[in-house]
Length: 455
Image (cartoon, rainbow, N blue to C red):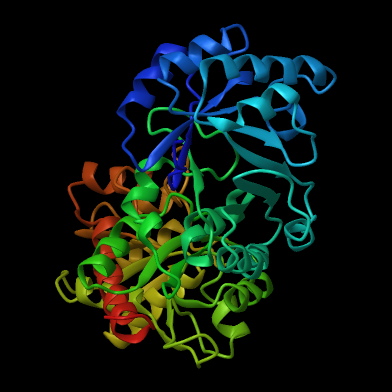
């Protein structure tokens, strides 16, 4: 009978032909999950046959994120049993259901995965592991209301591993991402992935190519967790930047997006997940260091081991200082007042640069900006995070046209409205991507040298 690989890839494509092409391209480390509820009009036996039996067959209820009506439970089970004629390698049956007689007879050639999706706020995994139903593998799915909730899975996953139980336990939602990526580290036997050419089947499900790039299947029990914490962070460049450097340095670390906007919740999560290294982004650059007893703003934290004291740095300041040293001297217009603006202000002061800082709380007139005649403009507001965001303080930017020679954009995107304004005006632009790479390189060095794990 077919073993269960680490990656189970849900075929979520709108058309079956697309799903079939995707399934045929999967390697030995990935098994397609055939969701019959996503192709309700197709013959289950024919779908299994098209996949040459190499699949996990599921038919998910609407209340558990599927499309099969909850009120037609008998029809759902009957539809699922029709797939048995195709002799699939694996079949998913809900944890609390009795095994239908026809499935029991087929267990000479079909392996059984028992699954349960619990309500938000429910964490009954440890109790369920003490009363397992019949099956060869088990899946428990909850919901992450707080980032630290992921840590509640570590003990039961380790227990299952130590007792030879093939279990996957993870949390849905953006805050549940660590439980999916750290599954092997914590003791899980498999995890679910979205197809690279199709949508995720559940909130927080990661593409197969992402899990492969992070080498999630190869992570060992001793691997430490680093990440970028803040909100939003799910589209951060950090994982693509840091993980290859960890791998090249043979460092037992993985770097993930950690979605969190509150300092108290973040501190709780650092302990629950034994985080070793952090890139801090908005809105936590000031509040999180303060909650840890450190003076901010800081964008980088690291420690040798869980429970050890934190060390901190501001690699944003290092990157800006390096860029500023290569820019024409003269007064500067600084836009914004948050953590990045405070960092920029400190660097400008240390460099002896005259500047005028402007924000919604600290407005300035067009006349004041014109009188300053700034040679440079530093964009340190949050405008630009969303594609529809306008350039900040357009009337003040217009007042700089006669004098400005350069501009710095802190948002790590190429196409912000401010960057477009700078390029159209012929200014020398230091884009956010350049600042990101400079500060991230300094972060990677600290993580590799200062965090636990073998190097």
